[in-house]
Image (cartoon, rainbow over all chains, first blue to last red):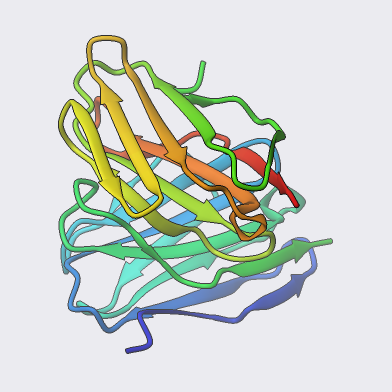
Length: 113
Length: 110
């Protein structure tokens, strides 16, 4: 089992460029999440999808969009990258939304110059 | 004020000692709590989950939940250098979203 797979692992963007972070899980989990992690700020929730067909904003959704493509895949899009979006992004999944443990992917380290 | 608070550390303990990591939370309605371990440059991995008051033991790890005082703790017995990592506490908040503390860095010295 691969668990939660994120691509790419590293990315450098210029301000204003766009990109999509991909996430797929093979654990048959209903719920999926995108977090960002910054030094001193901990993990902060960007968006989540409680189940296929639904998405909701988290704590820091501005500047991001998401798509729950199917039960396995949940993508995060930056339409116009800004230096403030330089961070490490983690995708996660769980059986039940927020009440069961999250399983994290390996992360994407994004730098916006 | 963050909804889940942790001392950032570092907490330094000698090998073989008990490491005690603490976390407080502000939302009295929180029901699910988790401890994650994160090595530098890696993703968080689940150590323990706890849902009811009291202690829960798993090997060298014991999680403690006290809802009246709104704190969660993690005890690591017989600490090893391989336990050196950042430990993240997480709990669900009023909106039922899972929020994380900033993490406590643990250093176990041989």
